[in-house]
Image (cartoon, rainbow over all chains, first blue to last red; front, side, top):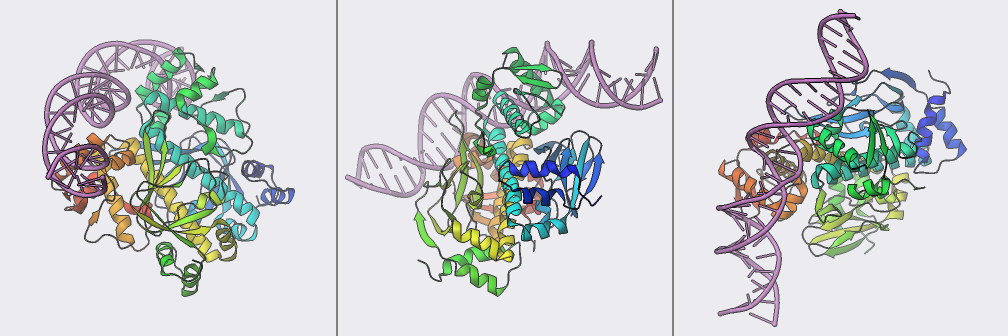
Length: 243
Length: 243
DNA sequence: TTTTTTGTGCAACTCATGTTATAGAGCACG
DNA sequence: CGTGCTCTATAACATGAGTTGCACAAAAAA
């Protein structure tokens, strides 16, 4: 599929979250040549050591970056949500230094690296928006380093929930501090550097204290101010302009 | 100081580590207008919440990015070494989401954000090299998330030492797997998400096992292969071409 | 339907790392 | 040439999080 498609709306909206874009830019993005692909949960979109020739953009669903240690444990490094470009860095770097996997069933639009390369040179306005998205992802990495390095389990998970909720709200996928976690407790453990057992303990604790209400994987933050306070959460690092 | 100065050699060399640059690019970088400044150890170069109007480039010495939690603990997020641009992200983002402090006495060249902005648009070759430097920093963030999240204390510190040594060697500041740690054990603890006491225990252990030889802050890696193996260290994520 | 697999929920026990405290080495400075 | 600093070193003790193991529920497969 090379023609206009509603799919890339998602990208344009996501980019305009942090960088104003005019109608022309919007139009241009929507008309970018791309190829739609669907992945089942758990599929590899990018493997460490390879050099992909397309950059997938998430239209629907979720993915995560991940690395494995030789001891067999897995660390999840970041989550991608609809509108996120998954692989800008491999435009510039030789080979991928980590894996990207789908969390749920995922629909992506592949954009050829050559198309992107041209875009970055010819449309400085859009280029700026793309770099901002990449820089914000790096900012989230920094916060995760702090979260994992210096917060205890309860604070850490509370922080994770706050961050994910705000990110979902920004793209219209959460309302009233209420959202669906698209992952198992094991994934959550791999995001926070904990064990699944301990994640389970802490989630129960957070429910028992009345900060959140859980129904399977549905989370409702009952007391946002208190949760955010316990979480040591401040959303400056997400760089969402209107918030 | 606005004229040619040997100082910015450092930047040009660092950029050319991962992205080939011709004599013209080299020359151009060395002639960039800049202002030299010197900071004592522990000075703040950038504060969370502000928007600096220059990007400092390290000519000599070391700096670190840092965030504080409300509980008063500090997490060091990354280390900058000579040739590193400290603040590319604030060209594009509204306000800084973290602090940057000097580790040792440090000499930087301030480049005005407006100068940089112009450079990024007019010299795509150099722009690419700058983006690559930023993307490699993000790659190091990812590895730190894995390091802190999924490796035990011994492995974690071993990994830190391997990484720092390779980075120093790449810019010619370490020879024969031997280098000077420009930081206290407390800094090291804040880099690895441990306590200073435990860092001390682990360093002693690494010496006792004969993997490293310590003399004050001088570290000699006595058995590189073994240390790297224990550290689960592979330098792919540093994206150093010639290595 | 039955069977299998995957995820959640707990409990009991272990251990790696944190906490607190103290002492000495080296250095900076009046 | 003390008098504080700051950093390193180490010991004793405390604890948060890991480990192992099992039960149950829900979803997927047969």
